[in-house]
Each structure stands twice: as structure tokens, then as C-alpha cells.
Amino acid sequence: MGKRSKYWILLLMSLLFCMPYLGQAKKVIVSDRVGDTWVERYDLSFRDSQNNIVSLNQLKGKVVIINLWATWCPPCLAEMPSLDQLYKDFSGNNKIVFLSVDIDGNLKASGKFLAKRKYSLPLYQLNSALPNALNTKSIPTTIILDKAGKLVNKHVGGMNFGSQKFRKSLLELSRE
Image (cartoon, rainbow, N blue to C red; front, side):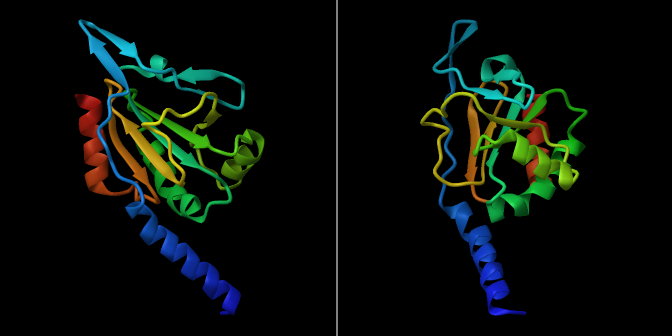
């Protein structure tokens, strides 16, 4: 194995093991309850390759998993197979929505990337700016909102979406 290959392997491993410690999970309210209604603090929306707009307001009552990634990001690519499998495993659960968000905003290139690897994840790009509570300077970042719109987890760095503990928590959120 050449020096260059060893360098890339070392870089990938360091990113995979160090990035999760850069972010902190916080419980932040994304929407407020006033009486029997929800009042949004902001309107976050996403656009798919067909120019369809999906807003968080439309996803009330569902658990929302937002994964921010890019094709040039080694930790993003490392977690992609387990994220895709999670999506496939939960595709029958209409209480969970997956938003795979290419932060570069080049849906054509990222769509080709996903198709080449036979990933099924629904692909989006940001249609509005991330609010401060959800914003990040590092990728991959996975944001999980509960049915009420509360931030349950904001994980900066690669994740193992195949974890049984994670899957169980996700199911519990969808049943609440």
C-alpha cells in the first residue's frame, strides 16, 4: 500500500472517529404550542430534483430525519450505506420522513452519485436557510425532529444508522 493510500485511510479514520465529538445534541423547540395550535418560528423548506418544495410545516405529525451531506465528504460517504438501509427498512412507516440533503445544491450530480451506488434515499437541497438551532459548519450532520417539531438530536459527524438502539428509539418516536 502506497503512502498516499495510507494517508487517505488515516484521514478517513480520524474524521470518522473525531467528528462526532464536534457537535452537541440539544433539545430545542422548533415550533411553539399556543393553546391547541402550533406556531412556527420559521419556515424551513427543501426542494427535490423535480422542483417540488417540501416544508417542515407539511411534515407535522411525522418524525423527520434530515441528513446533510456532500459527495466530496468521506465521512458522509462512509455512513451512506447504513442510512440508505435505514431508509429502506422504514419505508413502510408513514410516520417517518427522510430528507437526504445535498448541501452543494447540485441535485443532478448528487442524483447520479446515488443512482450509481443504487441508493434509494430521497434527495433534496435546501430551499431556505437553516435556522440557527439547526445550522452546522460540519458534515455529515443528522437532525432528528419529533412529531411535534422539537429537535430530538443533532449529530455532527458520521453515524451508524444500523445501531439497534438507534432504530428502537426511532420507532418509539414514531409511535408517540
